[in-house]
Image 1 (cartoon, helix red, strand yellow):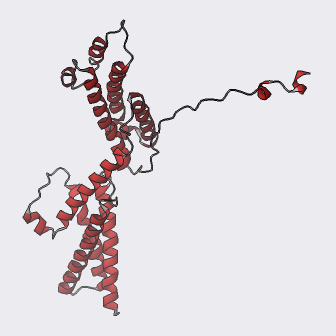
Image 2 (image 1 turned 135 degrees about the vertical axis):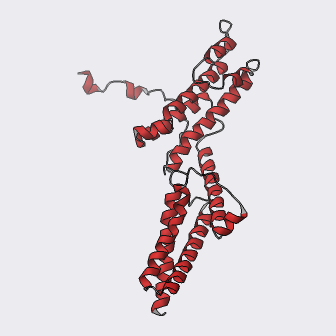
Image 3 (image 1 turned 90 degrees about the vertical axis):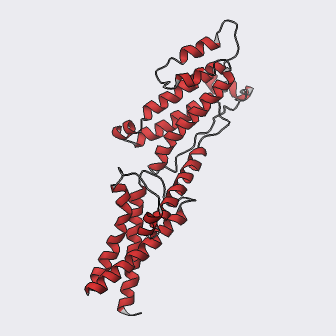
Length: 273
């Protein structure tokens, strides 16, 4: 290969590396760009961006009769356009034909990438919540995941993501579920206890739950459903911060302890002296 061909290959490789870095910056805090469903879209974005950036740099350099070093510089700088969306975060997204043509298809690939990241994130979060968990398991799992986040996020991040408020909302819902699931007792008034518990300030949608007061079992299912959704919010924070290796909560059943044998309980002859 000639020097010019080697320079072109080097430009493409560096442009793809630059595209990968800028793509990671774009996806920071949103998800994992190389997940099971998103990785191929991410590779397509990197490949297309590297190709367009290299071609554009080569064309500009040819027209301007610039030095070969300028080609490499433009090829590396071109992928920075992947971060323009993050810089223009306050602008609403518009998906139309003109925008797709203007971005030469990259915008369409980025939309597919975002969809794939969202699917990967949702699947990961669901994998950390067992649908068979009762209210106690849901509460213990929530505490476990909260402690994991509190150990890794600073005070500002915990406040921004409303970690404490989210956990309190989950606890308030599960507290009512435990009231409903408690064994029946002639001295108890479950409906009255539920009405009293619904007065908690954490129930911003109190009227939505009050319509189920005539069917407490259905109310319990609704509360557990909403508690799981709040748990997914906690897990989403962990996922977007790169804590995909978070240890899942598992129900810890206590194994029955065998009765001590006479040989163990009887004191040793030396100890009797």
